[in-house]
Image 1 (tube, rainbow, N blue to C red):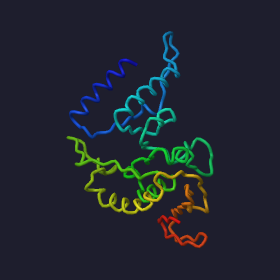
Image 2 (tube, helix red, strand yellow):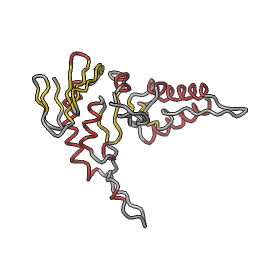
Image 3 (cartoon, rainbow, N blue to C red):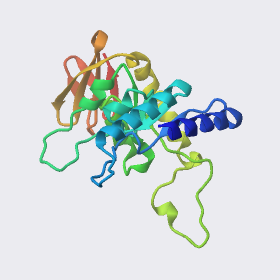
Image 4 (spheres, rainbow, N blue to C red):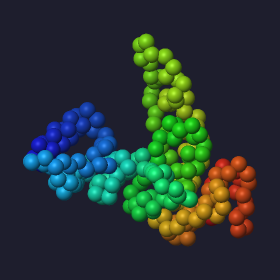
Length: 231
């Protein structure tokens, strides 16, 4: 709409002045379409077109990050963050399969939910690798404090001082894999056995992820517990 275009132009001018290298993160807008059935209602088709027009305009001006995007939003995203790594759980299913990640692999960068908000960061790190996603941490510079409120540390910490060593460790662990698979299509996903997975990328690249607590043998390869092997 004209109003949305004017808003984007003003926002872009502000960003140029305050943060010339900043990118844009679009949250919520990329995941749901609003509609209603009132007399002068707003249809899903209208909402879809407005979302497309807005994101298209954004993408011509800045690198756009979106959250868990539906297809219409992913088309204008450079990076998709907080992508799902499991089914809804509403039905009884044997296995969650990364169809979403396979569709956009080689075309968009896809990042996981923040690893540091989970109860087991090691397993979540391995899980995002087996789903073909880039590990993602949500960090702040300083400890969150609120007057009169105690016990915030009992939930999770998001300060770099707390998570910095792990972030560096995971970066060193993930970077060699990323250098091999970046830009490749994620073609196949196989469950070898419980907690052992094989991913196949274009160019014949295979990745074996061992999420178990024991060393695993697969073909002629031996993969240590909690490790990733590229073959």
